[in-house]
Image 1 (tube, rainbow over the protein chains, first blue to last red):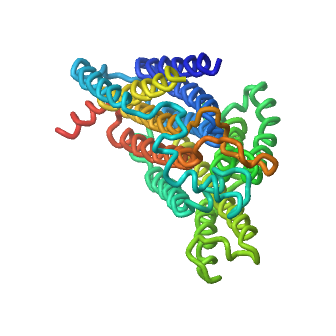
Image 2 (image 1 turned 90 degrees about the vertical axis):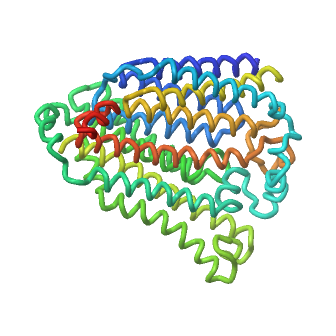
Image 3 (image 1 turned 135 degrees about the horizontal axis):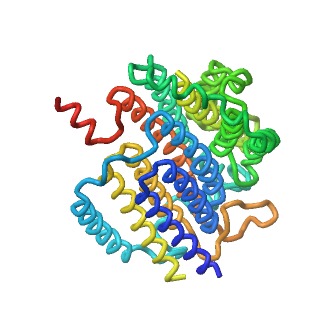
Length: 329
Length: 118
């Protein structure tokens, strides 16, 4: 049964990917990319990666689709030029595929508990996590504590990418943008004239926010954490912006608040690390944050997950607003 | 299980190369970024596939059943963060594409090279 389900999902994945590459209509391609993300999220779930599935569903199927559509609104919806040197590209790609396929025959058996990937640090994490950190979700424990440096780095990468988008898109629109203004005037109020999306969407927003907060604060016990929660909360506000228009969303959550949220989250993460040093341990060692090491670890993880959630939601919303504001400029 | 495992790796290889094809053969910059997303997703799939342990479940150890067999949490952690970093870098790429469109009036690579040559 699992085999059948796995094969079905994977085959659909390949079909969707081929359809994405073949279509000339970029709008269709972006929509298919959303389906592709959802399918791969289902695959991750089948492969026991609940946290990853949640992230992929929120980020890949939700936010990335919106960002691509935002970019399409500012560029063009159709691919004009036909594929260049198709034969040569196909030949290169087919050769590369054969090489990768050849390499897959050397890979360890699927699900083999003795595969090299399961021999290194992972068993140590699984064995010692209950006594060192004692939260049920090992993924959150590894993410927040054992590999806290990595996560700190990723948070700063997200922040830097957000700053980069702001720099790129908040520059004064050039001559090209002025001509578009007239054409865009009519379509800028979002879905305000459509009754059904408005009513249903408005009802959904508070529940998505609530779910985002649940995922944030329940991440130690079930699948979830700052990355997923940040994406979900950003998705709730983006949905609100699509229904009610961008200005009303900016009234609720002004741009400066978002900048403070994005930078503050990364700072909070760093501050927790420095607090570790000040209290006599290493950078990002949370054991000293409370009187007993396990409570300290749990406090540290809760704090840095809050920081991650703040930065991710702040950056994603800033990026969304940067694209939307460009659209109206 | 054997067949399903090989099938996972084959799908990884095919998806990787579909994404690669879109990046090298397509002229449209947005399409190239879409190809890059597929390429990226294929790598994610490979990592998660390798982390799977037969008969395991998600790496969540409740207090009442701490000794159950679970899949490897480490690849999941790496990919979890990689997904969010991936969307941030895609957003940056889309930002650059939007600026290119404003400066050149086109997002087709051939047009852009044509304009640059003049």
